[in-house]
Length: 180
Ligand code: XMP
Ligand code: MG
Image 1 (tube, rainbow, N blue to C red):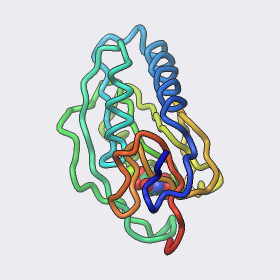
Image 2: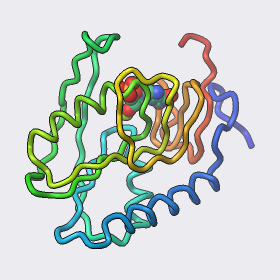
Image 3: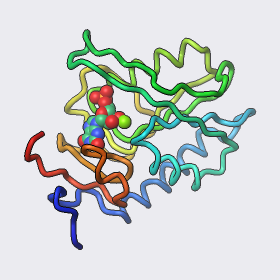
């Protein structure tokens, strides 16, 4: 296969991702099989848009979707500010919430988002991510549904970008690290 110039190799191919997404959808459906109100699935943009759409297409649980855009500034846990650029429109008080992420790296973004959303008193809040880089964690995150643990590569594809490129690739590729 011809890879884009900035991608050095395929880390997780399309077929492996597709079967993992199906597996995750089944596990999540099973988890919410007795749900009494539609699940609120919240995607963190932009990175989660492809994974989230693939995932919800495979799910049977009654659900609605909403999206949030968060941005992080700073480079340490103490100094990192996460600001919400776009908030959800759904009232989540008393609702079951599933947050969908593309990748959990340091865990800082998700920790802050969890704090913000849990202050709104959801009935439950769980986390689903396509990728997880456990070696980079500085802020503990309890991941309920995890696609793949990966080593510390910078990756693109399936919604993830490097400088806004590669989001549309249907696989996870390792980005060449010329100037990372
Ligand atoms: P933290 O460190 O707060 O950040 O868990 C998670 C966010 O960082 C971005 N991120 C990546 N984006 N390839 C990407 O395209 C990567 O390898 C990568 N690692 C972290 C991503 O936006 C994620 O939501
Ligand atoms: Mg992201």
